[in-house]
Image 1 (cartoon, helix red, strand yellow):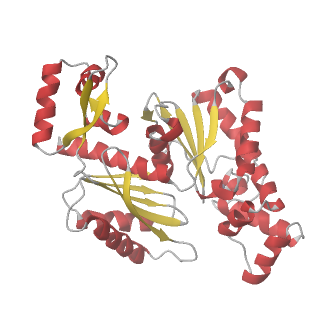
Image 2 (cartoon, rainbow, N blue to C red):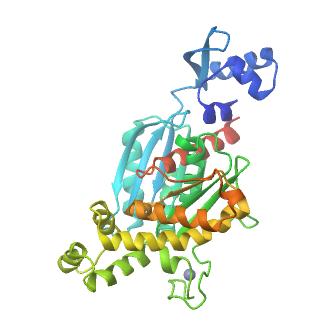
Length: 367
Ligand SMILES: [Zn+2]
């Protein structure tokens, strides 16, 4: 029942009995037990199909879930309710910082205390991108000692993105989707039949070191021609730097002159003003990635492909060429009706996905 309430929001008792396939009397007893324990409460009034007004049941607003989402450019600390609504949050900018793990763990914990006051969260979720691995570990360890008896879930950022998009927004009720996260590395997560695909060793979706051109450019991993060597944030910055040096963008050339180097934020800013170099690297990224995503579409037959992560913010050129390439290369019967779109640029899906994972661990540990 709690999983249904998490995914579908407040429900009438008739709706719950239908979805769960249990008699109304059994359901009433369960709702009464959960209400007495403070886990669920009455929600707003819904008008049923027969015109009758019924009170809905929802996860109690006193049950708050603490989520920390760490990406290459920021860490966010937020509280969400059982309906996966963000109720408060703090953003910690990580641009221009050499990531110091103890500083990050301290700052995250202080933010959590400020949001929660003296109360404890019902559960804690951490969604971490492939940043310094020790940074994510330090944050998880610090939260574990701050809230020792609370259930915890840790998921990768791309899986949080997929879980969040599954529960939220235009992907609502999309049980077959592929999330693509563009950041320091490119990663994907697949939701099939409503469940995350993990793989035999739990590493499903690590496509960054898929070698798309055996004799292509050198990759950070030591091999050549990996997908990351073309589309990771550092690869894009290197491509844009080279084009700016050759006089292809006066705006980026000025930044280069002033700062001595470019970073992803410079590309995002320039992309907003229609910079030609950013548009070009974005188009090439879309085409390169599109060939890989077309294969994923042929294999997994998703209803939706959603693209997120810090690199996705560089502009519409990425999405345009990605779409065109996938629709051109994927088998037509699988491309038909496929939706390809950008995730919320503010990364709300990561928080929602982290909270969904936290609620799952709460249900599994406390019930
Ligand atoms: Zn590689």
